[in-house]
Length: 604
Image 1 (cartoon, one colour):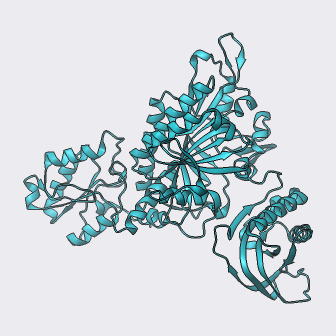
Image 2 (cartoon, helix red, strand yellow):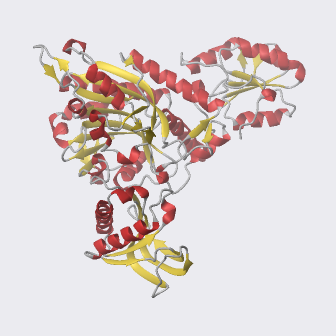
Image 3 (cartoon, helix red, strand yellow):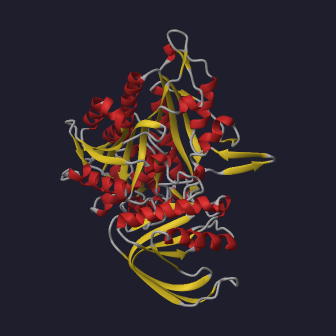
């Protein structure tokens, strides 16, 4: 079941005509409710497995929101447009009737007619809880334990001061304040289009795939290059950190005894596949494959910490309203590293090393964001200096979420978060200390006495989703452009790093030779267009360095147009030095498209 909950000054409707023949006749064709929680409802196919449970869970969610916004009246409004997987008509009518009756025990409830075309008008209040969405399933735990557990937000300063977030002076840390407000009150559902969507299309990086479902993208050559460079770099970082690279299956047996319990915690995320009599599911993380591998390994305490790593293609059936460009996808690539640790001290040391590694990734990609660390309160109280060390390493205040009790698999979790252009936040890097899954999957090691013990387990993604990293880069540049600055990907990620524009055809061969001599991705705009038009094209493509090539340049003196600070005039050797300065031995790849622009197709 999908719910869209709006705190409204009023909601009114007028029934116009039947949308389905079996729609009930109406005594009144119109109605209105003032000062209400208006709940748009779509009953889905999955609800049919246990209607009673769905109704109980939906009523719980509605009552909870009604209490928070302080209303006693609820308008239930059937709204099929919230879902593409609707339940049958009879089931939907029965479910809505049951939900009405359930809520009527505690609230004043009205229900807009089912199966009628209706005109409606409403006025939504403008506060953080006025617009919320919920996905309700038959399972008793509607949200992940992480989001449903009681928690309190704090700000932890580099000096070690822990201050309740509501009491903290965010002056000078406005982005941290935005992040806190989103975490405490925001909704993941996208009401506006984030800026990165237009940019990813205009730059011909990535686009929606009409031949597939939502959340599955097509990557054009430029975008694939950027993605590949990020993948290679994070892979190298994990290997240099001592991780052993593995590969595990994309799909698993849904009835596997070790996986079945794990699956029940994430019912809404799964892609299920029937293969003969077998039911399989597409992995939504690389965790299970590495868990099962670790279960079969023979491990000694002398080999700990032990790290497994995979650059994993994973699949999550994210909710339709949460899908937004490449920020949240149903098919994505993410480096997953799991580290087995003998004890808490070893786990904390590894956590700090991997935290620093993730900060290296953030700085490498020139990203600006906010750090969040989430603790079970008892763990924090046992390790207060550990948290303070993280804040000192970051050098700025961090957001701390403290849960009163553990109702999920980890006791500590770090995230690096970005604020986008439409008021949403999203996470990239993460490190988590897992105290549950080693026992659930019977992962063991032999201690000093030869006894089998369950290790602690660190879940780590140095970068977070690779697709999402590109989203973060584009959203950051969109903010700069709104301030009047020019957008640009980091030099090492720019599909074309230098664009040569010959003023006449006779200089094309010279440009091609220069392109061969420079240690960068250099292309040549040989099209039959004016120099000014070709410069504008390069600007629109965010090419970092543009060189118009004519008689003067034949003598080895260049006047570059740069999207970053650079001299007005460069010799060949100085141009090489400029490239090396901005590459800093980072991962390199050749041009993703033909070197001559006249030979390139358009992808959009």
